[in-house]
Amino acid sequence: MLGGGGPDKMEQAMAMAAQNPHLEAENTKDFLALWTKMAVTCFERCVTNTQNSMIDPNSKEFSCIENCVGKHVEANHRIVKKFTESQETFTEMQQKYEDEKMREYKDKGIFNENMELIPKKPKTPEEMEIEALETAAPKFIVDAYKWAKGQTE
Image (cartoon, one colour):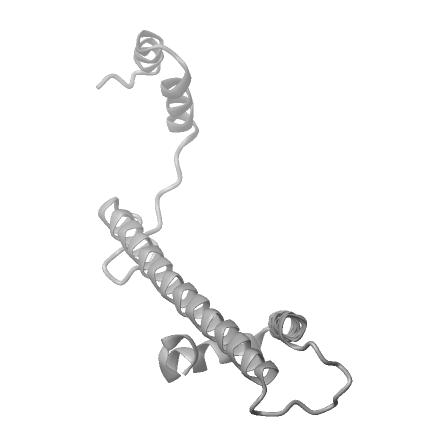
């Protein structure tokens, strides 16, 4: 169980990656680069004798490599776990924001109870003229325009 996300979260992540071959290739590339860097770092730090092709399991080199790899793996697991937690928090915050916006749109009459868009009657040219004046002209000009058009309130 990588990152503590549980099997369901891991399956969801794997399914998302499988749906996007480019993302899957990038993830594989990043994964291989990470492990290659770890192998090089641990080899350079721990292996002093390159004459032997085998390392004795009881040697200091073997113990050093084992500890080095263990630290890298543990650090990677912690990073993945923190990233997963932050992604979950972000997703929750994004969902709350979207829910709030949908409630706001519903309260404004943009959506009905079934969250379907409520069609609006198109504005007449006169209504659009008044709206344009209201956003750009002083109130007395708008009032004079409405009076001239016979649209006093």
